Image (cartoon, rainbow over all chains, first blue to last red; front, side):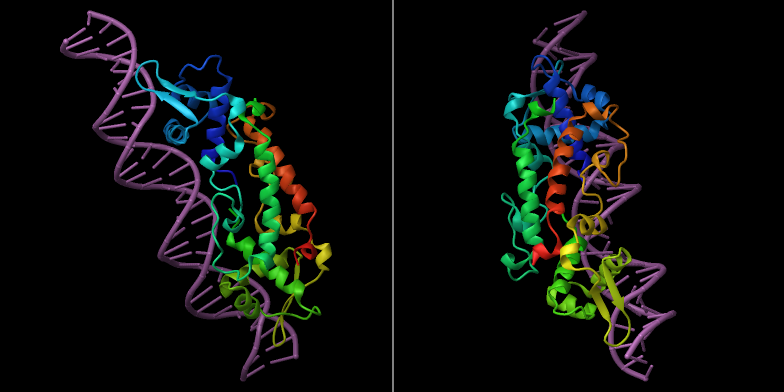
Length: 135
Length: 135
DNA sequence: TTTTACCCTATAGTTTTAGTAGATTATCTA
DNA sequence: TAGATAATCTACTAAAACTATAGGGTAAAA
């Protein structure tokens, strides 16, 4: 299941990408427009900013804005920042690899074998989609 | 994240598929061999049986066994039984469709657009893998 | 009467999805 | 320049849902 955090984060990014210029948009506006709890969205936008996907400006006329062009924001990045590993098991994760504590031999593991394929196919989708492709 | 339920279920199915004949194998044997909590595995095997993937026999010499050939057990079925919907959001699910309560227009939704692709790619993998392919 | 699956319940732990309260910073206005 | 206002930022809390497991008893087959 996709977490609401990721869902809302994606919607917010899309909303910002649709904005004409790159002037700051307030949290409240995004929240209202996308039917998102404002406080929840606040924390989501914060992590997007901390991970270099958004810029922010405080005070009057402040808000959040994209710091890259939509076509340069890849879904691999967005998904990893919001949802975490793309792989469904750590033992097939590229960026978050971890050995299973059960499972003596990865090569022999049927779960490993299957999830490797799933990861690759998901990765393929995320690599071929930028924010611009979702507009 | 893949739940341990699914992971253990897959491992158990694989174990049963590797067995020579189709004689019943006891829960305890599978649990021990695959490093799984026996009680947890018990409930997993039960749902697999209830969903037509396994047969069982009580009493001495009892246990669980496959009721189909591994090549006839598709990963789509296994995943749906154990993990639930293959889609990451209900609004792109084939078997568990549900409308999002936010989101006025599915066609316009960026999340929908992306997750549709992810679902299709995952489905592609699951459709092309049977239990026999994982051995 | 032993051996096994079956069934029900409880529970600790974690994750998710928020809500609350206030601090901080930038801008505008008098 | 002072203060009001508008916004992000930060930290803490909490309800709800889900996950993974344990315990104990029942039913059926040999």
